[in-house]
Image (cartoon, rainbow, N blue to C red; front, side, top):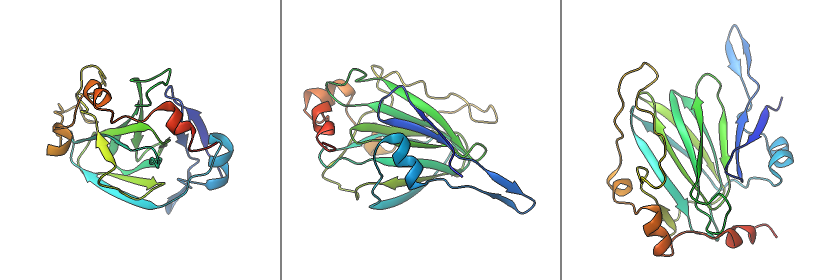
Length: 203
């Protein structure tokens, strides 16, 4: 029943497209399955916390990341609506440091994104009431959670300018995300994880 896996251009991040089984009642799918996940990604996903967010059109959440160790891996899907999900490489020393990739998560293809420890995560909601589900490998740690400004011109994330119906979108940020440092500031302040720290999590 497993779907297809595709590694993103940011190593350690994967797009998962599940098989859907529609019938006159609706449809069924496995949005996460441990054995095929471990087979493709190379390790399992421990579950410590499951989160849900509901966002109006234009809302941008992130770019969020956690201290390493312990780090926080995430497995993310959109149960209702649509979001552009973005993964950013924040691992100092990584060949792809500072680059990003994105996947459209919606209630049509019902894809998911996995991002390993040391990567940043963000998304923009493309319609009202977009509902995002997250499986997290570690619990929320307010002293170990950080952010990068999602509109940082050095990151140059290509956020959508229109929703799924074609109406104009304006990014809407929380006060915390709007006050987040740029990538250069976070690097200078020593906030970012290193590639070696991430590698040490799985010897």
